[in-house]
Length: 428
Image 1 (tube, helix red, strand yellow):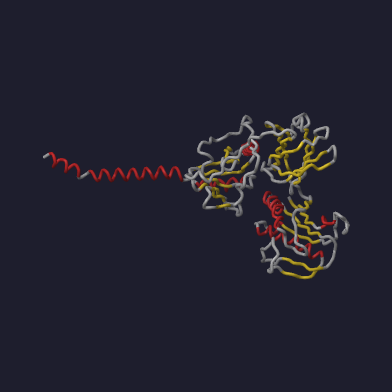
Image 2 (image 1 turned 135 degrees about the vertical axis):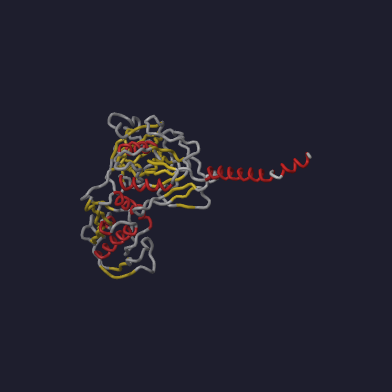
């Protein structure tokens, strides 16, 4: 009787076990999903290497009635400023479109993932400690990169009106490939000063890459030309005063000149733009764009000899021009081409359908013409490149002057500067 009762009960045992295993399986999948699936999507309006710049953008966004916060993304050593977060990625994308269309933010993208499993949302506060990293990250949120061996996936900046870039962590489980945070500790060396040159666009608080000249005003001598947003190690000039001058040289922005006293960096005359953090001297440069009527010289756009084909190193300054145009959709320019002299000769140029802007090849066309024609073709090459990047053709005019407006005599030591491209802002 007992064994019959046992068999009767045991008929349901497989059902119980099956149900239990099924529930465990669902629970395991749910746990794995919660660990590996991106939890939150953020609408990001800026990424900064210098924490105080993130604070400035948060305050600026708050004045525009946006609820802004910032967090540090440890693997990139950058501070992300965001104005919206949601578990629904589509809601984040819709909000990104709204923010971009309604507010004055040219760089808006959606980041999906986790900044750091132990991170907390940061609110703007002057009590937050200042951290300056010694090097810039190897890549930024605006550069497109993807790799099966990487834990990151990012897409480029906005290219179409309704296309919102996305940045996503695709493998939360793998920690082996994540970059270690860069050390910000500085071991000072006697006889040297350490400067961080913080160049920002005053309009949107975006960090601007470029170069800054360091001048010894006592000897009227250029000591160095260094990159902004990197920690600069400067040897003591030993000029008696400890005074140096810093002059920005960044395409698209007016020059800014600051005086710094290395032994007394923060004083009544410098406190508006100089601060210190430990042994580092932080020099802030608020950069302003040129306006209508101004003319910018593109000295760092280079062409092959007798050709309207650019050399690859021209891309940096071209991107600066592109950024200037994207920043203000009403801005229009005229691109002026100039040469050294008015000689006739061979001209290698691009067909309108040819996109090979940066290397000489058999697919380029060749003719014989004047220096004026060559200068026109060169200006046209830049125009076509900008159009390919999404700039409305109606915003771009071109002129070729040949050697009619030379800056120096054809045989002067500075005659190479006659070969140039100028950008005139005609509408702002």
